[in-house]
Structures are given as C-alpha cells and as structure tokens.
Length: 301
Length: 266
Image (cartoon, rainbow over all chains, first blue to last red; front, side, top):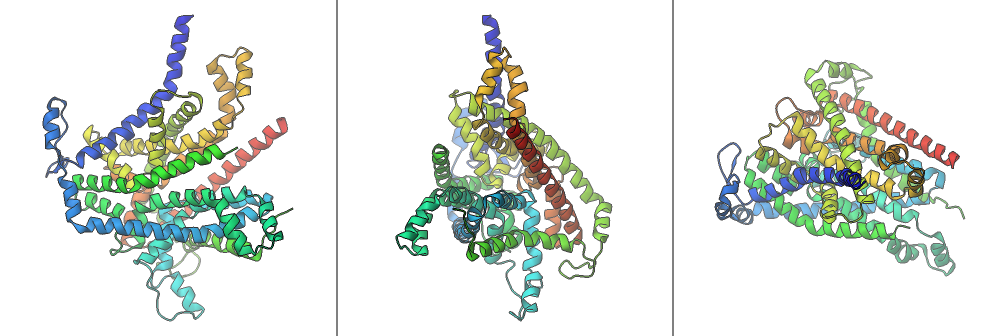
C-alpha cells in the first residue's frame, strides 16, 4: 500500500517535472549562456567566441570574463542612439495605439451583446494571419508609386507621390497596425465590464459627456490602458521585422542592431551584449506588466 | 437599459476594422492580378497560383514549415497542458516562482533575444542546426502560449465533477482521461491551433536556429521581399490567409457547438 502511494506520488511528480525540466534546459540555460558570452572575447573561430566553458577550470573561466563588450557598447554611440530611438519609437507607437484602439474598444463595448462576440473574433482574426505577410502588404500600399499614392492622386488630394515607405512614419503605421489587437482586447475587457449607471448618474447630475469620459470612463479603464500599453510597448522596443521592412536604413532600433551584429558582422559576443542591454531596458516594464496582470487576476470575480 | 451605438461609435468601429482588413483584402485582390507589377492592376488572372505551385523552392519551404508546425505544436500541446496542470493543481511546489517566470518570460521577451539564446545553446551542446533545432525552439516558445490558454480553462473548472468520479471509485489517471480531459479538450485544441499558427508565422526565431535544408516559408518570403515585391508571394499569402481563416472558423464552430451541448445537458 505504501509502495503504491510512492509510485503514485512519483507519477504525479512527473506532471510539473517534465515542463519544468524542458524550460530549464531550453530557456534558462540558453539565457545563462548569452549572459556568459556577453562577457567573453570575440574570436575568429567556429563558433566565433571564446572562452568555452570548462568545469575543470572554473577559476580561469571567471578570470577570463570581462566587461569589454559592454565597454564597447558605451564607446560606440550607435548603441546609445539605437536604444534611445527604440524607446522613443515604441513610446510614440503606444500613444498612437491608445488613440486608435480606445475608440474601437469603446465602440465594441457599447455594441449590442449579440454582436460583441463577433466583433471580438474579428479583432483576433488578423492576429492569426501571418505577421510577416500583413507587414508585407503595407509595402505595396506605402510605396511611392503604391496604392495609397494612387488613391490620393485619384481623388485629387495630392499630386506628388507620398514618401512614407522607408521613413519612421511607415514604422509607426506598421506597429499600430500589427499590435492593434493587443491594445483593443485588454481595453475592451475593462470597458465591457463598466457599469453604465455611473455614466447615467453623471449625466443626470449635469456633467457634460467629455467630462464624464475623463472623470469616470478613463479612470475605470485604467487597468486595461496600462495592460494594453505595456503589452504593446514591450515587444515594440525589440521589434525587428517592422523597422527592417518598412523603416529603411535610417530607422535605428536595438532589435535590428542585434540582428545585424549577429548576421552581418558575425560578432556573437557583441550581439549577446546587445541582447543583455535590451533585456535590461525591458526588465522594468516587464516587472510592471507582471504586477498589473497579477492584480487583474486577483480582481477577477 | 440597452446600450446604443452613437455615430461616433459606429464611425470608429468602421474605420478600425477597415484599417485591420483593407491591407489583407488588397493582398488577396492583387494575388489575382494579371500584371507582373504588384501595384498595377492588369486584369483578373490566376497565373501566379500556377507559378507558385511550380516554384519548387517555395513549395519545399512550405512543406518544411508545415512539418515543423505540426511537430512542434504537438509537443508544445503536451508540455503546455502538463505545465497548466502543474500550475493549477499542484499548489506550492518547490521552485514555483521560477517556473511561473519561465512560462511568462518567453512570451514578453523580444524574439531576437530568444532566438539568439537558443542558437548559442545549440552551438554549446554541439547540435547541428536545421529541422530539429527549429522544432525545439518553436516548441519552447509556443508551449508557454498553450499553458496560458489551458490554464484559463482549468481555473474556471468545476472540480466537483472530478471529486464525484473519485468518490465513485475511479483512480486518478482514469478520472483524468474520462472527466478532466474531455472537459478541457476545447482549450487544448485552441492551444494547439495557436501554437501551430505561431510556428507557421515565426521568422525571427527560425532564422537564428535554422540550418541547411530547413528554410521555412517565412524565411523564404522574407528573403524574397527584400529583393522586391512578387505576385507569387501574394498568391502564397492568400493561400495561407485562406487556410488560417478556415481553421479559425472551424475551431470557433467546434467550441460553440460543445458549449451549446454542455448548456443543453446542464
């Protein structure tokens, strides 16, 4: 009897152990390796970095580590500028996403109940179609001789081709387009639960609509606003595909810098340092995000 | 009181959805373009679909993508479901905080970091890059999404059904397969589909971890887009969009029907 409960407990223990082990091997260990390589020297070799870790030589391993790569990051102001411009582009995109996403989420929350599920499905559906393809579609639209220029010259609004592709504007359009569902869904979730009687009461007491919006709707939607903003801001900072395809060579972003450091310059240690730098920028937003999410989970009835 | 849509609400909904769908619609329309130029309409034609199916490099990439997607989504579904069970049913096990962290981190971390770190790991353990490294990388990333989807269902699960089965003498494993699994099945299917589409879609992680003979469709499309727009890619994209739409609609119908059935039985 006792033996059976032991095997039972062993079998039950496998449930958390298997995914735990998997993530340990394929997530935690790789991550530690990046950290280690960011502290080692570049070398012309395959793989192009050293030192290779050896258990027998732990002291030597630690003495070989240095902050050289990070020093390089501080000396070359390219990385400083790339970091700054990533944060700026991600922040501006997040504000634009709020401006576009809030009215959409608000309209969804006010739609009749039988239509709401369909509207939610319609917001999610583009998310299931390839991200790369959706960004690719914008190239044909934004090109100087593209569909937007054709449409606007067609109705006589402009006479010169629009120069949007390969500018920062194209990156904003791309990010707002690709991340819109991530902004709309959390906003919708909080707006949908909002108690209409509060707005009615404000109206009865003579509050103009814009004032009710600022003093009632916005504060009540705050958890959704924060969650949606972080959900968009965090991946936007490290974005690679959108600036690469739409932004042209002028647009500096840190995720793209990592990519070119790795694929073009083949400097693995420096690429690892850029990865660590990017992660350091994102730690604070990620911690805030986790906190907001945990509170949202608790608040759920 | 019933909520009323104002003119402002309707306008923002129409504009919002037009913004979401117009680019996709244009892509589909222009895949039937007779002209070689991607932005000039030259009459209706299906020639690019023919060209696409004769393009061996593109079809080969599609086949690799499909195999990686099915394999990694299957593994991710098993691992993700186990992780969701561990999180909802095992209370406080040692290292739970680290475990939760490892579930959420890959979802918020930029893909360039995940891709790079996995590649450096594969190099360190001397695993040749190719089909398997991409599959392992996709499994790791997508299992976290499966976990979240299945966990949401388990959290709202009525445990008295399981307790009833146990009281009637069913051993835990049998209870799991006869009661728990059928009840969480829709979320497992949804998790699988999510993992599958994420894998089909991924460019960044696959680019870091791929090797000879394992060029996926996104990598192929990406390299061609850099050379310029091509109507063949429009055709390939349209087929992908069609498949995904079909998958989502059938998944919605399945879960709707099972929801209806459970409501009728209740």
